[in-house]
Image (tube, rainbow, N blue to C red; front, side, top):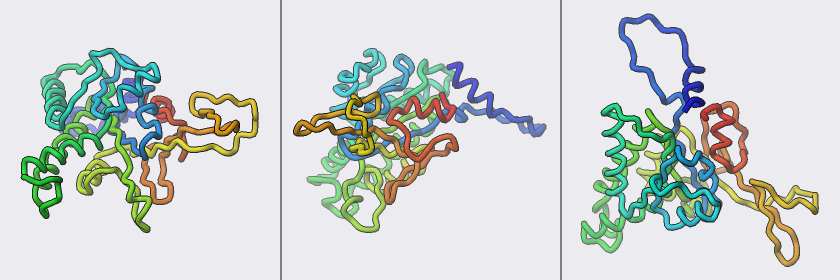
Length: 277
């Protein structure tokens, strides 16, 4: 908490002297961060470095808890919230907003949603059933207004909470981005919601875990960000990277002058480097 207060104080400026006094803001050190990429690129792993005991996890993706456990970064059970529907997550974030509006200290600094893609898939099934469709979109236009309203309410909650905490949203990449010429790679969400989340996010980070070919030391055994795997008796090196700037048609954006285009796949280290932690 002390580090966050220092970051806020650093941005303080002299008052305008106007009789219309503001309320101040904590957003200086808080962000709505979206991390996305193709499956199995260690998105959850890159977020797992956030401080245990100061981070709440909304776990809806089936791989979330297993990944945290495998990395030996599983939080206390009090800080894991497993939900099975968008409505449950929406209710929880409503409770958080009510608490802070009443002046209550939430008692944590980071909230992670893993993943927004899973929530979207679930809720599409729910709305399709409510509108007597086999899948959402079977009947032109039917159900989408309700879906967008429900998902939009959740995204608005997450953005509102950044007045008090940093929120991290994990999502998957839309596969069609690699197949259609001229398209931009974006989140695997219906277009209106992908655009809405991108609009609300302060940081959009693209996550990769790809082979690294420039390691010449045959004795290198890997480190925190570079893994070593054996393939037919030959060493292969794979690097975990968070991209902060666009990569071809890949969307990425960060409002910080302290970060390079490629940074190690560690969100906590990234935030510290940017002066936010």
